[in-house]
Length: 162
Ligand SMILES: [Fe+2]
Ligand SMILES: [Fe+2]
Image (cartoon, rainbow, N blue to C red; front, top):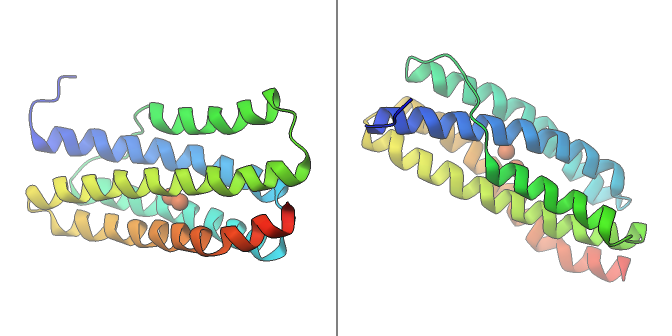
């Protein structure tokens, strides 16, 4: 279907975010098994639960614009997942280095999500759909909190692993 106006663009972006969240949910569950640091593991597990909620919030965002939730293939999310998986397959990392890699990999994902939510919020606001924008901002806040946590704790975690 051709995208010719902002509401169609928002539909595409919501679908893209939905696909990405589903992809990252699987990734977070995988990642939580690779992490040994208890504080990191706990936070990643909690973000996996938050991600489940985010999927529900996105479904509500679709409803706020009068649409049925429908995912659209997100090449960026697939690429980020592949980057993680190919590091593991191609570089034969030790468990410690896999864990250290995961912190950076996780941070990349959070920033990708932040960019996606910020642009979708701008589109929802341009359309005057404040409810949709509010719902998306809920998810954005969780992504920002997760990114901040990873940034603030990465050094300490790396020092333990290295
Ligand atoms: Fe997310
Ligand atoms: Fe996230």
